[in-house]
Length: 75
Image 1 (spheres, rainbow, N blue to C red):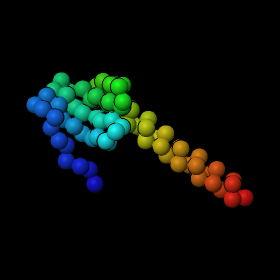
Image 2 (image 1 turned 180 degrees about the horizontal axis):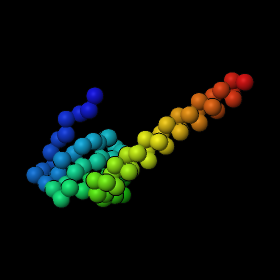
Image 3 (image 1 turned 60 degrees about the vertical axis):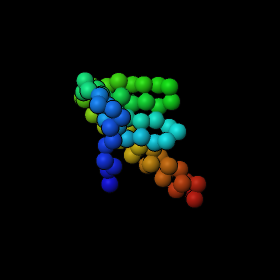
Image 4 (image 1 turned 180 degrees about the vertical axis):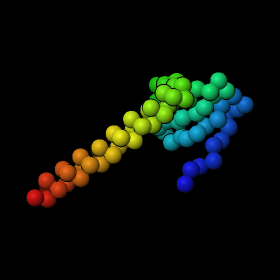
């Protein structure tokens, strides 16, 4: 279940965060900011949705790859 977004200040809404890893927030100009460590990636809404699609597909492929490796290791 999604968490309720929290407001950092009037100009930023935190959409997601993971302690000791990073956060994703929406700024008052409508840009998404993905912060991981010292990296800050600013994305337009369209770019953000492309990133979501990219990560979603890569996660599914990674899970499939892990399953194949487990099956091969089991013989």
